[in-house]
Image (cartoon, rainbow, N blue to C red; front, side):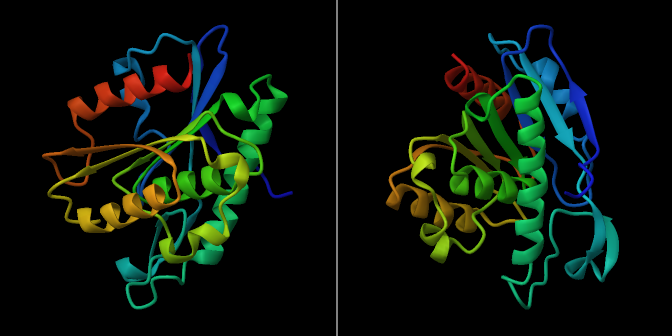
Length: 217
């Protein structure tokens, strides 16, 4: 087994659930840490923010940065192997949570942009059910073939997807295509659109809190 990913954690005494929250391209585990105090959540939760490995990223001229997978605009599926490796690395963190007393069914996966791709992929393909999944300003990788990977256990996992109408990094049309695929597969999908770019806004944070309270009754 590879070395576990580095993580930043915000723990709550008596936590009965965990949120593993993945950052976007070029960011790190601290990126969403400031949001936690803004979340009005009733259940005590542990928040785990992993750092992606540093790797060259083709779309950025080969510059090295934290990334869950390479992005090559000339070959959209070229990052598949990286995605699979990142999914395995996050699954290792999920198993660690189980060892700490939080079973998979009490773990919610969240991710922004690249991180959302990994969070959704793991939530949809796990042989054991998660508490929920959040994909923020993101999309399904290889959506045309995702039905070949989804698990029976995932079919009733609540999914939250949110996107900015003016996102210049990931056009909202790409997110809508992913949304339609999830609806086609009969997933329990909560969809939100905000008047923003590639970011998170206060209204979204309030909606995230409501979703967390739904997933962690």
